[in-house]
Length: 153
Image 1 (cartoon, rainbow, N blue to C red):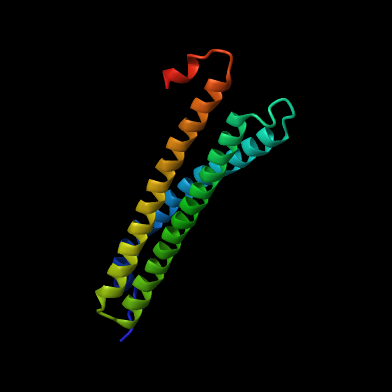
Image 2 (image 1 turned 30 degrees about the horizontal axis):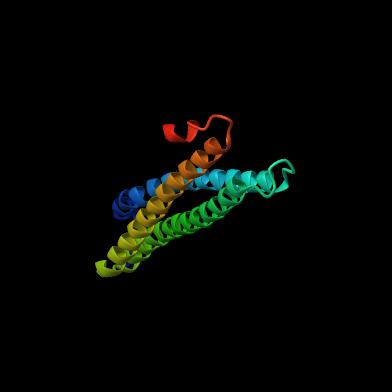
């Protein structure tokens, strides 16, 4: 018998609130990550086209770091998007399981664990990107006129 009354659906709506909030939070993370990706790409283009700095060893090192950062951010964005997708599938699965009265919690558990693992790895790669950006800043400070500027970091 399929639950069709509001009293039967309300518990499922309550259970779906957590994944919905997760999707919202991941969406904000994705916004931040795509902004960082855009800034890294813009900075790489700026360094590449600056005729005053072309050929400098530090510029080449900064470009290599920016490329590594862009790859890390892309991975982070991909994993965060997969996490949001898995949360959306989890919500749909919750409702389908309730409507069909399936008692298989394994599928729901696997989806939730996959969602959290994907988000966790995404955040780890995001932290690695932040550390790389500090390394690039150190290189840029070393390139400045003050030879001690790079030691401050």
